[in-house]
Image (tube, rainbow, N blue to C red; front, side, top):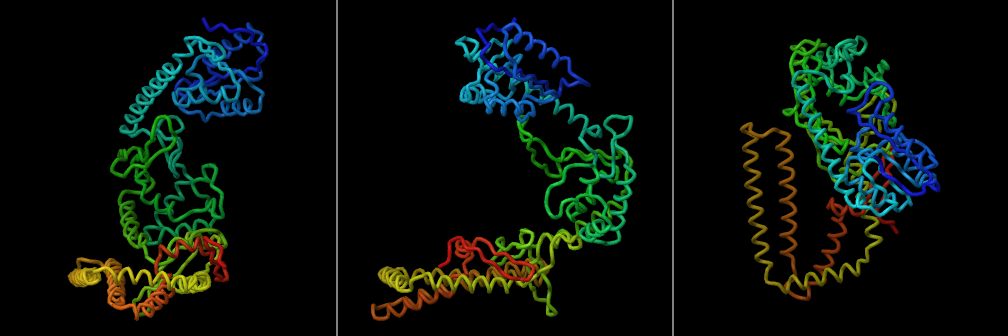
Length: 520
Protein backbone atom coordinates (compact mmCIF):
# COMPACT_ATOMS: atom_id res chain seq x y z
CA UNK A 1 0.00 0.00 0.00
CA UNK A 2 1.20 3.50 -0.72
CA UNK A 3 2.30 6.05 1.82
CA UNK A 4 -0.04 8.02 4.06
CA UNK A 5 0.23 11.79 4.34
CA UNK A 6 -1.09 14.55 6.55
CA UNK A 7 -3.37 17.38 5.47
CA UNK A 8 -2.59 18.19 1.83
CA UNK A 9 -5.53 20.44 1.00
CA UNK A 10 -3.35 23.56 1.03
CA UNK A 11 -1.09 22.30 -1.75
CA UNK A 12 -1.32 22.59 -5.52
CA UNK A 13 -0.19 19.22 -6.83
CA UNK A 14 1.45 18.02 -10.03
CA UNK A 15 0.81 14.37 -10.87
CA UNK A 16 3.84 13.22 -12.87
CA UNK A 17 3.72 10.04 -15.00
CA UNK A 18 6.49 8.55 -17.14
CA UNK A 19 6.80 5.43 -19.26
CA UNK A 20 10.09 4.37 -20.85
CA UNK A 21 10.43 3.67 -24.58
CA UNK A 22 11.14 0.00 -23.90
CA UNK A 23 7.60 -0.43 -22.48
CA UNK A 24 5.89 1.74 -25.08
CA UNK A 25 2.97 0.22 -26.99
CA UNK A 26 0.57 1.46 -29.64
CA UNK A 27 -1.98 3.91 -28.31
CA UNK A 28 -2.34 4.93 -24.65
CA UNK A 29 -0.17 2.70 -22.52
CA UNK A 30 -1.83 0.54 -19.89
CA UNK A 31 1.05 1.40 -17.55
CA UNK A 32 0.30 5.09 -17.99
CA UNK A 33 -3.35 4.37 -17.24
CA UNK A 34 -2.43 2.48 -14.09
CA UNK A 35 -0.12 5.24 -12.87
CA UNK A 36 -2.73 7.90 -13.52
CA UNK A 37 -5.43 5.90 -11.74
CA UNK A 38 -3.20 5.39 -8.69
CA UNK A 39 -2.22 9.06 -8.43
CA UNK A 40 -5.78 10.32 -8.92
CA UNK A 41 -7.04 7.92 -6.25
CA UNK A 42 -4.44 9.26 -3.79
CA UNK A 43 -5.41 12.86 -4.60
CA UNK A 44 -9.11 12.07 -4.16
CA UNK A 45 -8.64 10.38 -0.77
CA UNK A 46 -6.68 13.37 0.59
CA UNK A 47 -8.92 16.00 -1.08
CA UNK A 48 -5.79 17.27 -2.78
CA UNK A 49 -6.18 20.07 -5.36
CA UNK A 50 -4.49 18.89 -8.58
CA UNK A 51 -3.15 21.69 -10.74
CA UNK A 52 -2.26 19.45 -13.71
CA UNK A 53 -1.21 15.96 -14.79
CA UNK A 54 2.09 15.68 -16.66
CA UNK A 55 2.65 12.58 -18.83
CA UNK A 56 5.90 11.64 -20.61
CA UNK A 57 4.87 8.50 -22.51
CA UNK A 58 7.80 6.83 -24.28
CA UNK A 59 10.65 8.73 -22.57
CA UNK A 60 13.66 7.14 -20.90
CA UNK A 61 14.38 7.88 -17.26
CA UNK A 62 18.09 8.40 -17.99
CA UNK A 63 17.34 11.85 -19.40
CA UNK A 64 15.49 14.74 -17.78
CA UNK A 65 15.02 16.61 -21.05
CA UNK A 66 11.41 15.45 -21.36
CA UNK A 67 8.64 17.77 -22.61
CA UNK A 68 6.10 17.19 -19.83
CA UNK A 69 8.79 17.27 -17.12
CA UNK A 70 10.14 20.56 -18.48
CA UNK A 71 6.60 21.97 -18.53
CA UNK A 72 6.17 20.93 -14.89
CA UNK A 73 9.40 22.73 -13.95
CA UNK A 74 8.15 25.90 -15.64
CA UNK A 75 4.93 25.71 -13.59
CA UNK A 76 6.98 25.17 -10.42
CA UNK A 77 9.06 28.26 -11.13
CA UNK A 78 5.86 30.20 -11.86
CA UNK A 79 4.63 29.27 -8.32
CA UNK A 80 1.70 27.28 -9.73
CA UNK A 81 2.85 23.94 -8.26
CA UNK A 82 4.27 23.19 -4.81
CA UNK A 83 3.77 19.41 -4.59
CA UNK A 84 4.99 16.69 -6.98
CA UNK A 85 3.65 13.14 -6.76
CA UNK A 86 4.87 10.06 -8.66
CA UNK A 87 4.07 6.38 -8.47
CA UNK A 88 7.66 5.53 -7.47
CA UNK A 89 11.09 7.15 -7.53
CA UNK A 90 12.06 5.56 -10.87
CA UNK A 91 9.19 7.49 -12.55
CA UNK A 92 10.93 10.72 -11.58
CA UNK A 93 14.18 9.48 -13.17
CA UNK A 94 16.85 6.78 -13.27
CA UNK A 95 19.93 8.99 -13.27
CA UNK A 96 20.86 8.98 -9.59
CA UNK A 97 22.92 12.17 -9.87
CA UNK A 98 20.14 14.29 -11.41
CA UNK A 99 17.45 12.59 -9.34
CA UNK A 100 19.37 13.58 -6.22
CA UNK A 101 19.76 17.12 -7.59
CA UNK A 102 16.01 17.59 -7.94
CA UNK A 103 15.13 15.97 -4.63
CA UNK A 104 17.89 17.45 -2.47
CA UNK A 105 18.36 20.86 -4.11
CA UNK A 106 15.86 21.94 -6.75
CA UNK A 107 12.61 20.99 -4.97
CA UNK A 108 13.66 22.40 -1.55
CA UNK A 109 14.95 25.64 -3.11
CA UNK A 110 11.59 26.16 -4.84
CA UNK A 111 9.51 25.14 -1.82
CA UNK A 112 8.22 21.95 -3.45
CA UNK A 113 7.25 18.85 -1.52
CA UNK A 114 7.85 15.50 -3.23
CA UNK A 115 5.94 12.25 -2.59
CA UNK A 116 6.68 8.82 -4.06
CA UNK A 117 3.71 6.61 -3.24
CA UNK A 118 5.07 3.06 -3.48
CA UNK A 119 8.49 3.91 -1.98
CA UNK A 120 7.05 5.72 1.03
CA UNK A 121 9.13 8.81 0.27
CA UNK A 122 7.72 12.15 1.51
CA UNK A 123 10.09 15.09 1.83
CA UNK A 124 7.47 16.90 3.93
CA UNK A 125 7.88 14.41 6.80
CA UNK A 126 10.78 12.97 8.76
CA UNK A 127 10.87 9.24 7.96
CA UNK A 128 13.45 6.50 7.51
CA UNK A 129 12.26 6.02 3.91
CA UNK A 130 13.67 9.43 3.06
CA UNK A 131 17.09 8.47 4.42
CA UNK A 132 17.52 5.51 2.07
CA UNK A 133 16.32 7.45 -0.98
CA UNK A 134 19.87 7.87 -2.41
CA UNK A 135 20.31 4.08 -2.38
CA UNK A 136 17.01 3.62 -4.23
CA UNK A 137 18.19 6.12 -6.84
CA UNK A 138 21.44 4.20 -7.33
CA UNK A 139 19.53 0.91 -7.79
CA UNK A 140 17.26 2.57 -10.37
CA UNK A 141 20.37 3.84 -12.17
CA UNK A 142 21.92 0.36 -12.21
CA UNK A 143 18.70 -1.03 -13.66
CA UNK A 144 18.84 1.53 -16.49
CA UNK A 145 22.49 0.65 -17.11
CA UNK A 146 21.68 -3.05 -17.33
CA UNK A 147 18.80 -2.41 -19.74
CA UNK A 148 21.11 -0.24 -21.88
CA UNK A 149 23.66 -3.06 -22.14
CA UNK A 150 21.00 -5.54 -23.22
CA UNK A 151 19.57 -3.20 -25.84
CA UNK A 152 23.06 -2.44 -27.17
CA UNK A 153 23.77 -6.17 -27.45
CA UNK A 154 20.54 -6.81 -29.37
CA UNK A 155 21.18 -3.90 -31.75
CA UNK A 156 24.76 -5.03 -32.31
CA UNK A 157 23.52 -8.49 -33.26
CA UNK A 158 21.02 -6.96 -35.70
CA UNK A 159 23.75 -4.85 -37.28
CA UNK A 160 26.00 -7.87 -37.78
CA UNK A 161 23.11 -9.66 -39.49
CA UNK A 162 22.74 -6.75 -41.95
CA UNK A 163 19.41 -5.51 -40.60
CA UNK A 164 18.78 -1.76 -40.75
CA UNK A 165 18.16 -0.37 -37.26
CA UNK A 166 18.50 3.36 -37.95
CA UNK A 167 15.75 5.93 -37.77
CA UNK A 168 15.79 6.97 -41.44
CA UNK A 169 17.58 5.29 -44.37
CA UNK A 170 20.32 7.05 -46.31
CA UNK A 171 19.24 9.36 -49.13
CA UNK A 172 18.12 7.24 -52.09
CA UNK A 173 16.45 4.53 -50.00
CA UNK A 174 13.27 4.10 -47.95
CA UNK A 175 11.96 1.52 -45.52
CA UNK A 176 10.52 -1.67 -47.00
CA UNK A 177 6.70 -1.42 -47.02
CA UNK A 178 6.17 -4.85 -45.43
CA UNK A 179 9.49 -6.24 -44.13
CA UNK A 180 10.90 -4.78 -40.93
CA UNK A 181 14.55 -3.63 -40.85
CA UNK A 182 14.84 -3.76 -44.65
CA UNK A 183 15.45 -0.90 -47.07
CA UNK A 184 14.53 -0.54 -50.77
CA UNK A 185 15.35 2.14 -53.36
CA UNK A 186 13.31 5.34 -53.27
CA UNK A 187 12.77 6.02 -57.02
CA UNK A 188 12.97 9.89 -57.08
CA UNK A 189 15.99 10.11 -54.77
CA UNK A 190 17.63 7.02 -56.32
CA UNK A 191 17.58 8.74 -59.72
CA UNK A 192 19.46 11.72 -58.24
CA UNK A 193 22.04 9.41 -56.63
CA UNK A 194 22.68 7.61 -59.93
CA UNK A 195 23.06 10.95 -61.66
CA UNK A 196 25.60 12.11 -59.05
CA UNK A 197 27.69 8.97 -59.57
CA UNK A 198 27.49 9.38 -63.35
CA UNK A 199 28.76 12.97 -63.15
CA UNK A 200 31.55 11.91 -60.79
CA UNK A 201 32.54 9.12 -63.18
CA UNK A 202 32.90 11.73 -65.92
CA UNK A 203 35.56 13.43 -63.80
CA UNK A 204 33.49 16.28 -62.38
CA UNK A 205 34.51 17.52 -58.94
CA UNK A 206 32.23 17.39 -55.90
CA UNK A 207 31.98 21.18 -55.93
CA UNK A 208 30.93 21.19 -59.59
CA UNK A 209 28.29 18.51 -58.98
CA UNK A 210 26.87 20.44 -56.00
CA UNK A 211 26.74 23.66 -58.04
CA UNK A 212 24.80 21.94 -60.84
CA UNK A 213 22.29 20.39 -58.44
CA UNK A 214 21.74 23.77 -56.78
CA UNK A 215 21.29 25.43 -60.17
CA UNK A 216 18.62 22.83 -61.05
CA UNK A 217 17.01 23.40 -57.60
CA UNK A 218 17.24 19.73 -56.68
CA UNK A 219 16.33 19.49 -52.96
CA UNK A 220 19.21 18.17 -50.80
CA UNK A 221 18.68 15.12 -48.55
CA UNK A 222 17.55 17.09 -45.47
CA UNK A 223 14.94 19.05 -47.43
CA UNK A 224 13.79 15.94 -49.31
CA UNK A 225 13.30 14.08 -46.01
CA UNK A 226 11.42 17.00 -44.47
CA UNK A 227 13.96 17.42 -41.70
CA UNK A 228 14.49 20.83 -40.07
CA UNK A 229 17.46 22.47 -41.78
CA UNK A 230 20.00 24.73 -40.15
CA UNK A 231 19.63 28.46 -40.53
CA UNK A 232 22.01 30.44 -42.69
CA UNK A 233 22.44 31.88 -46.14
CA UNK A 234 23.32 28.48 -47.62
CA UNK A 235 20.66 26.45 -45.83
CA UNK A 236 18.86 23.98 -48.09
CA UNK A 237 21.71 23.73 -50.59
CA UNK A 238 23.96 20.92 -51.74
CA UNK A 239 27.59 21.15 -50.62
CA UNK A 240 30.74 19.50 -51.87
CA UNK A 241 31.13 17.77 -48.51
CA UNK A 242 27.70 16.17 -48.80
CA UNK A 243 28.49 14.94 -52.34
CA UNK A 244 31.84 13.53 -51.20
CA UNK A 245 30.20 11.62 -48.32
CA UNK A 246 27.65 10.10 -50.71
CA UNK A 247 30.25 9.03 -53.26
CA UNK A 248 32.18 7.17 -50.54
CA UNK A 249 29.14 5.52 -48.92
CA UNK A 250 29.16 1.76 -49.62
CA UNK A 251 25.41 1.60 -48.97
CA UNK A 252 24.90 2.62 -52.61
CA UNK A 253 26.60 -0.55 -53.89
CA UNK A 254 24.44 -2.83 -51.76
CA UNK A 255 26.42 -3.01 -48.50
CA UNK A 256 24.80 -2.17 -45.17
CA UNK A 257 27.06 0.28 -43.32
CA UNK A 258 26.18 0.99 -39.68
CA UNK A 259 27.90 1.71 -36.37
CA UNK A 260 29.57 4.90 -37.61
CA UNK A 261 29.17 6.48 -34.19
CA UNK A 262 28.46 5.40 -30.63
CA UNK A 263 26.87 7.11 -27.64
CA UNK A 264 29.29 8.47 -25.07
CA UNK A 265 27.16 7.06 -22.25
CA UNK A 266 23.73 5.57 -21.74
CA UNK A 267 22.91 8.77 -19.83
CA UNK A 268 23.91 11.09 -22.67
CA UNK A 269 22.52 11.70 -26.15
CA UNK A 270 25.91 12.88 -27.43
CA UNK A 271 27.82 10.57 -29.76
CA UNK A 272 31.39 10.24 -30.91
CA UNK A 273 32.42 9.16 -34.38
CA UNK A 274 34.23 5.87 -34.86
CA UNK A 275 37.06 5.22 -37.33
CA UNK A 276 36.09 3.42 -40.52
CA UNK A 277 37.76 0.19 -39.43
CA UNK A 278 35.26 -0.08 -36.53
CA UNK A 279 32.14 0.30 -38.69
CA UNK A 280 29.79 -2.66 -39.12
CA UNK A 281 29.69 -3.46 -42.86
CA UNK A 282 27.63 -6.36 -44.24
CA UNK A 283 27.80 -6.98 -47.99
CA UNK A 284 24.92 -7.57 -50.40
CA UNK A 285 22.02 -6.85 -48.03
CA UNK A 286 19.82 -4.76 -50.37
CA UNK A 287 19.42 -3.63 -53.97
CA UNK A 288 22.38 -1.43 -55.06
CA UNK A 289 21.92 1.90 -56.84
CA UNK A 290 25.30 1.65 -58.63
CA UNK A 291 27.34 -1.38 -59.58
CA UNK A 292 30.49 -2.25 -57.66
CA UNK A 293 32.85 -1.38 -60.52
CA UNK A 294 31.40 2.13 -60.89
CA UNK A 295 31.54 2.71 -57.15
CA UNK A 296 35.20 1.67 -56.92
CA UNK A 297 36.19 3.88 -59.87
CA UNK A 298 34.42 6.89 -58.34
CA UNK A 299 36.03 6.23 -54.97
CA UNK A 300 39.48 6.26 -56.60
CA UNK A 301 38.69 9.60 -58.26
CA UNK A 302 37.47 11.17 -55.01
CA UNK A 303 40.40 9.90 -52.94
CA UNK A 304 42.87 11.15 -55.54
CA UNK A 305 41.73 14.72 -54.89
CA UNK A 306 42.00 14.55 -51.11
CA UNK A 307 45.65 15.54 -51.11
CA UNK A 308 44.91 18.79 -52.92
CA UNK A 309 41.92 19.65 -50.75
CA UNK A 310 43.78 19.10 -47.51
CA UNK A 311 46.73 21.29 -48.46
CA UNK A 312 47.39 24.03 -45.92
CA UNK A 313 49.42 27.20 -46.04
CA UNK A 314 51.17 29.17 -43.34
CA UNK A 315 50.78 32.93 -43.38
CA UNK A 316 50.87 35.70 -40.80
CA UNK A 317 47.11 36.45 -40.63
CA UNK A 318 45.94 32.85 -40.60
CA UNK A 319 42.59 32.42 -38.86
CA UNK A 320 41.71 36.09 -38.24
CA UNK A 321 40.50 37.27 -41.70
CA UNK A 322 36.70 37.14 -42.21
CA UNK A 323 34.20 38.06 -44.90
CA UNK A 324 32.33 41.23 -43.94
CA UNK A 325 29.32 40.25 -46.08
CA UNK A 326 28.42 36.80 -44.69
CA UNK A 327 30.66 36.51 -41.62
CA UNK A 328 32.42 33.36 -42.83
CA UNK A 329 36.14 32.94 -42.37
CA UNK A 330 38.23 33.71 -45.45
CA UNK A 331 40.09 30.71 -46.77
CA UNK A 332 43.19 30.69 -48.96
CA UNK A 333 43.56 29.39 -52.51
CA UNK A 334 46.77 29.07 -54.48
CA UNK A 335 47.22 30.27 -58.04
CA UNK A 336 50.49 29.36 -59.70
CA UNK A 337 52.21 32.02 -61.76
CA UNK A 338 53.67 31.35 -65.21
CA UNK A 339 57.02 30.69 -63.53
CA UNK A 340 55.51 28.11 -61.16
CA UNK A 341 55.63 30.28 -58.04
CA UNK A 342 52.86 30.10 -55.43
CA UNK A 343 50.60 33.14 -55.15
CA UNK A 344 48.05 33.00 -52.32
CA UNK A 345 44.66 34.71 -52.43
CA UNK A 346 42.00 35.21 -49.77
CA UNK A 347 38.57 34.00 -50.91
CA UNK A 348 35.27 33.83 -49.01
CA UNK A 349 34.62 30.30 -47.79
CA UNK A 350 30.86 30.61 -48.40
CA UNK A 351 31.42 31.67 -52.02
CA UNK A 352 34.01 28.93 -52.47
CA UNK A 353 31.49 26.27 -51.37
CA UNK A 354 28.47 27.70 -53.21
CA UNK A 355 29.82 29.84 -56.08
CA UNK A 356 26.60 29.86 -58.13
CA UNK A 357 24.06 30.02 -55.31
CA UNK A 358 24.28 33.80 -54.90
CA UNK A 359 24.78 33.60 -51.12
CA UNK A 360 27.95 35.71 -51.25
CA UNK A 361 30.13 37.52 -53.79
CA UNK A 362 33.59 36.82 -55.16
CA UNK A 363 35.97 39.35 -53.63
CA UNK A 364 39.39 37.75 -53.73
CA UNK A 365 42.53 39.65 -52.78
CA UNK A 366 46.19 38.76 -52.48
CA UNK A 367 47.30 37.52 -49.07
CA UNK A 368 50.42 39.69 -49.32
CA UNK A 369 48.31 42.80 -49.98
CA UNK A 370 46.18 42.27 -46.88
CA UNK A 371 49.20 41.37 -44.76
CA UNK A 372 51.12 44.49 -45.79
CA UNK A 373 48.11 46.73 -45.07
CA UNK A 374 47.53 45.22 -41.62
CA UNK A 375 51.22 45.31 -40.71
CA UNK A 376 51.51 48.95 -41.81
CA UNK A 377 48.50 49.94 -39.69
CA UNK A 378 49.74 48.05 -36.63
CA UNK A 379 53.23 49.51 -37.00
CA UNK A 380 51.75 53.02 -37.27
CA UNK A 381 49.74 52.55 -34.09
CA UNK A 382 52.74 51.12 -32.24
CA UNK A 383 54.87 54.12 -33.18
CA UNK A 384 52.22 56.46 -31.81
CA UNK A 385 51.48 54.44 -28.70
CA UNK A 386 54.98 53.43 -27.59
CA UNK A 387 57.20 55.93 -25.79
CA UNK A 388 60.57 55.62 -27.50
CA UNK A 389 62.33 57.18 -24.50
CA UNK A 390 61.03 54.46 -22.18
CA UNK A 391 62.00 51.83 -24.72
CA UNK A 392 65.48 53.32 -24.94
CA UNK A 393 65.86 53.14 -21.15
CA UNK A 394 64.75 49.50 -21.12
CA UNK A 395 67.11 48.66 -23.98
CA UNK A 396 70.04 50.27 -22.19
CA UNK A 397 69.27 48.29 -19.03
CA UNK A 398 69.08 45.06 -20.99
CA UNK A 399 72.36 45.78 -22.73
CA UNK A 400 74.09 46.57 -19.46
CA UNK A 401 72.87 43.30 -17.93
CA UNK A 402 73.96 41.37 -21.02
CA UNK A 403 77.35 43.07 -21.04
CA UNK A 404 77.85 42.22 -17.36
CA UNK A 405 77.34 38.53 -18.04
CA UNK A 406 80.12 36.40 -19.41
CA UNK A 407 77.86 34.31 -21.58
CA UNK A 408 77.88 36.17 -24.87
CA UNK A 409 80.63 34.10 -26.42
CA UNK A 410 79.00 30.84 -25.33
CA UNK A 411 75.62 31.92 -26.72
CA UNK A 412 77.19 32.88 -30.05
CA UNK A 413 78.92 29.52 -30.24
CA UNK A 414 75.63 27.69 -29.59
CA UNK A 415 73.90 29.71 -32.29
CA UNK A 416 76.67 28.96 -34.81
CA UNK A 417 76.29 25.25 -34.01
CA UNK A 418 72.53 25.43 -34.60
CA UNK A 419 73.14 27.24 -37.88
CA UNK A 420 75.45 24.45 -39.04
CA UNK A 421 72.82 21.83 -38.16
CA UNK A 422 70.11 23.72 -40.08
CA UNK A 423 72.36 24.02 -43.13
CA UNK A 424 73.06 20.28 -43.01
CA UNK A 425 69.31 19.66 -42.69
CA UNK A 426 68.65 21.73 -45.81
CA UNK A 427 71.26 19.70 -47.70
CA UNK A 428 69.56 16.44 -46.68
CA UNK A 429 66.04 17.44 -47.71
CA UNK A 430 67.40 18.76 -51.01
CA UNK A 431 69.01 15.38 -51.65
CA UNK A 432 65.74 13.63 -50.73
CA UNK A 433 63.89 15.83 -53.22
CA UNK A 434 66.33 14.96 -56.00
CA UNK A 435 65.94 11.24 -55.26
CA UNK A 436 62.14 11.51 -55.29
CA UNK A 437 61.76 10.65 -51.59
CA UNK A 438 60.14 14.01 -50.83
CA UNK A 439 57.30 15.68 -52.73
CA UNK A 440 57.66 19.19 -54.11
CA UNK A 441 54.99 20.48 -51.72
CA UNK A 442 56.70 19.02 -48.64
CA UNK A 443 60.10 20.24 -49.83
CA UNK A 444 58.84 23.81 -50.18
CA UNK A 445 57.15 23.73 -46.79
CA UNK A 446 60.10 22.24 -44.87
CA UNK A 447 62.73 24.32 -46.61
CA UNK A 448 60.76 27.53 -46.08
CA UNK A 449 60.41 26.85 -42.38
CA UNK A 450 64.08 25.90 -42.01
CA UNK A 451 65.29 29.00 -43.85
CA UNK A 452 63.09 31.22 -41.66
CA UNK A 453 64.53 29.61 -38.52
CA UNK A 454 68.06 30.02 -39.86
CA UNK A 455 67.43 33.69 -40.64
CA UNK A 456 66.10 34.29 -37.12
CA UNK A 457 69.20 32.68 -35.59
CA UNK A 458 71.37 34.83 -37.82
CA UNK A 459 69.68 37.96 -36.49
CA UNK A 460 70.23 36.78 -32.91
CA UNK A 461 73.91 36.13 -33.64
CA UNK A 462 74.31 39.59 -35.15
CA UNK A 463 72.59 41.19 -32.14
CA UNK A 464 74.95 39.42 -29.73
CA UNK A 465 77.95 40.43 -31.83
CA UNK A 466 76.90 44.06 -31.65
CA UNK A 467 76.57 44.11 -27.87
CA UNK A 468 78.55 47.03 -26.42
CA UNK A 469 81.87 46.32 -24.78
CA UNK A 470 82.00 49.74 -23.16
CA UNK A 471 79.44 52.22 -21.78
CA UNK A 472 80.38 54.78 -24.47
CA UNK A 473 78.76 52.94 -27.34
CA UNK A 474 75.93 51.45 -25.23
CA UNK A 475 73.52 54.30 -25.96
CA UNK A 476 74.07 54.01 -29.72
CA UNK A 477 73.48 50.27 -29.66
CA UNK A 478 70.32 50.70 -27.56
CA UNK A 479 68.92 53.17 -30.08
CA UNK A 480 69.50 50.65 -32.86
CA UNK A 481 67.69 47.94 -30.84
CA UNK A 482 64.68 50.23 -30.30
CA UNK A 483 64.56 51.00 -34.01
CA UNK A 484 64.83 47.29 -34.90
CA UNK A 485 61.99 46.49 -32.50
CA UNK A 486 59.68 49.06 -34.07
CA UNK A 487 60.56 47.82 -37.55
CA UNK A 488 60.08 44.12 -36.82
CA UNK A 489 57.23 44.33 -34.29
CA UNK A 490 54.77 42.74 -36.76
CA UNK A 491 56.91 39.81 -37.87
CA UNK A 492 55.90 37.84 -34.76
CA UNK A 493 52.51 36.11 -35.22
CA UNK A 494 52.05 35.77 -31.45
CA UNK A 495 52.61 39.50 -30.90
CA UNK A 496 50.36 40.42 -33.83
CA UNK A 497 47.48 38.26 -32.56
CA UNK A 498 47.76 39.87 -29.14
CA UNK A 499 47.03 43.23 -30.83
CA UNK A 500 44.60 42.35 -33.66
CA UNK A 501 41.30 40.55 -32.98
CA UNK A 502 40.02 40.13 -36.54
CA UNK A 503 40.25 41.59 -40.04
CA UNK A 504 37.14 41.90 -42.22
CA UNK A 505 37.09 42.23 -46.01
CA UNK A 506 33.97 43.54 -47.79
CA UNK A 507 32.91 43.15 -51.41
CA UNK A 508 34.73 46.37 -52.38
CA UNK A 509 37.95 44.87 -50.94
CA UNK A 510 37.95 47.42 -48.13
CA UNK A 511 39.69 46.22 -44.96
CA UNK A 512 38.36 46.77 -41.46
CA UNK A 513 40.82 45.97 -38.67
CA UNK A 514 39.46 45.30 -35.19
CA UNK A 515 42.01 45.65 -32.39
CA UNK A 516 41.87 43.94 -29.03
CA UNK A 517 42.65 47.27 -27.37
CA UNK A 518 41.38 50.68 -28.43
CA UNK A 519 44.04 52.47 -30.54
CA UNK A 520 44.98 56.00 -29.53
